[in-house]
Length: 309
Image (cartoon, rainbow, N blue to C red; front, side):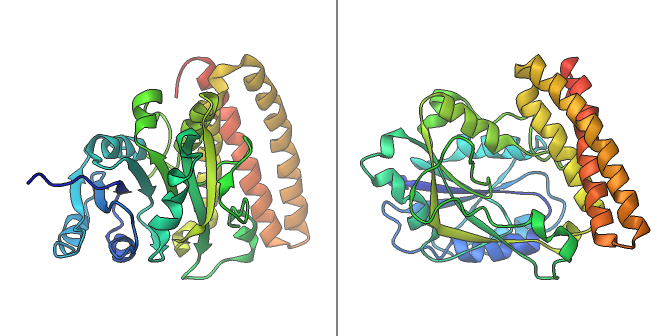
């Protein structure tokens, strides 16, 4: 008898994070009350650590994760490989460093079973950052949870859930295309915006994006992600990716962003100097990070205007 395909595919793209991947898998394989069943894919994007061995250690689990290696570097190459490999009707994309409750999948996919399900293009769950190594006060404001609403339902166009905890009906990729591989992380580069661009495309096609607060996950943030160096790199690359995501559609957008961020750089540098003089080191760092974010815009806007990434 042919094997019955599961209703849900959980795909976890990963790159050199074997330790936290193990913790994520421990929660994902213990989901309860999932109508139609589910499968788990681990999309290894050229890891050089023991990621493969971690996946193999779950060989006796039900369901046992399926290991897939994607050699094209980049998060969205891994996501697109998951689309090709998925056997479920619903594709859940999860980060490799999240911790989930046993009813996570049930809560995240509940909206697709409602009468409004046909018009839903994606459902995102709440992502709550946690800091096992502590959180420096000066970066705390950049790590707040995106708590959009208290019940399951649609979001307005200006709100988009995070890609760490996001579900799609697989059909939307056949009808509206896959993730743009010019965005999001490639190895150590901190580009972002792939899911935002996809959600914008789905909304333009008349589909809704929903939020499921009960499908909450904990997103582990190690000390390496709360350093001044990481904050500046992330600010610079996130600004660049936002230009790539949106800038090519409008010369007016490029021009206004360039002028605005030129002025912001000057303002934030002056603010940083003032805070340094009065020994407010936390505010000094925040001003420099914001200045470096504006530098990301100034760097990328001319490149985008010339058709370059």
